[in-house]
Length: 391
Ligand SMILES: Nc1ncnc2c1ncn2[C@@H]1O[C@H](COP(=O)(O)OP(=O)(O)O)[C@@H](O)[C@H]1O
Ligand SMILES: N[C@@H](CCC(=O)OP(=O)(O)O)C(=O)O
Image (tube, rainbow, N blue to C red):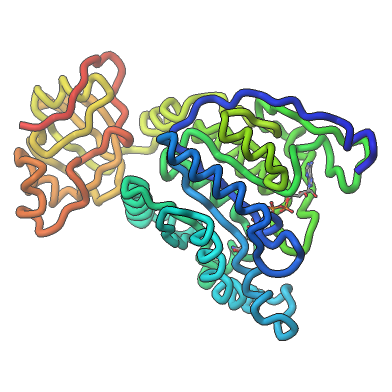
């Protein structure tokens, strides 16, 4: 970087208020000294997570660093990083030390969650992953997500925890995606190559021009570089989630973040999370089936804030499975809402008219009290009341 670049002060801006965030921490911050993992920068980030928790906010951590930790364990015997199987082996070796590092810095229990992009493309696994993460958060545990590198062949080649973090942000319904990097902002070009590059504090829309600013990783251990961070910000924006990119090396930046102040680049989402989800539900391809509900349920669903509980269900038709998009119709057959069902058609028929507390007794298991959770539900226009449906 040039003197001029170093002297450029990135303005501090207020972050929108948030309740749940995904924080992505890259290898360069965890293996900052070029060897194994070090708490050097992770400490301030862990303090930020804990302070957020104390303030009633939830953070899901997406952490890289397994490969770097694995390599450090084998020292001189570590295989060259170009070989995919070797990187997978190193990740398997380093995953436990990576979790141990976060546990050593966290007063709360830490849970390991390993996911592949593939898991999140399959609706049932997606729903199960979401239910597990929600449960961990409600238990007050810190979930630490990484790619399941042992099986994620393509994903490991891309080395893409930035994109994984964006997908997890949508999965857990986060309000904000935080990307801690070794660089303090998005620059107009890779600052390591272009002495004229200047930092941007705000990006309204991830246009082709913005995407073209990104180069690859500036180091050996980092894999994605700025390109995957912009892809992640773009994915998050499509889901209605803004992204904040900042330097995890600067402790004052991390402390300020805990006070709602960002020194870095803010990527606006353009639309809200709810607008993005409702838009998708309303415009998604044809529903896999129908759930007919009673008048009380119709009234409750109209407000857009109620879940569909079994008590309001009359019957179901079509061959739908857990996770499918279903249309919810009133007794006459008129559609009143669309949503992602927690239960398949056979299960919904058996649960029709029953109380949520009976689900376990009727089915012998339960995926939760709701047939369709309110987060997964979009009522059709013109309906305005609220309250959960239960008889
Ligand atoms: N336009 C750009 N703005 C900022 N950084 C860039 C840009 N293009 C490429 N980079 C590089 O991306 C690096 C950050 O990505 P990476 O090394 O993968 O970090 P991490 O381990 O945090 O994922 C920066 O250090 C920088 O060298
Ligand atoms: N899953 C790999 C890291 C992949 C990755 O995206 O790395 P990074 O670019 O440092 O966030 C690991 O734990 O080493």
